[in-house]
Length: 93
Image 1: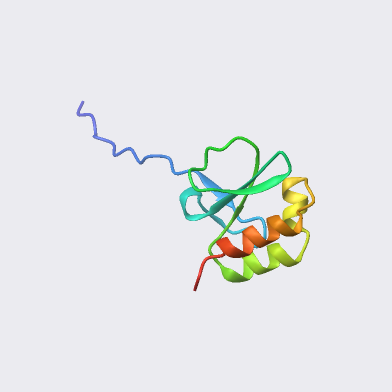
Image 2: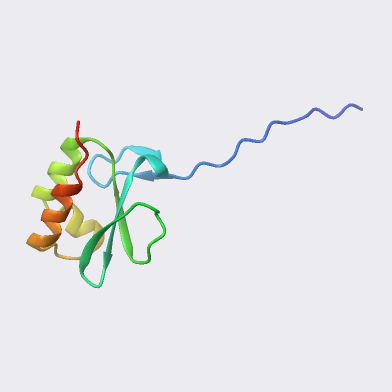
């Protein structure tokens, strides 16, 4: 009996954008983390703290800043400083 050689594909973790719920590979999304009540961008994806993901769509970023979607996902109330930091990190189109 001849064994067939199987090609093994590496697992690519997927996450969902908290605004549009689109599933994408983790590396294609931006992770936002709340640590001690402050919002940070997590480029490494490894910071400790409660996290949420946003896709690169500007509409998702604008909705995240204007609504309470991030408040609900991160279980925290974002202050003006956090919203300012978020607007500065918004991807340019």
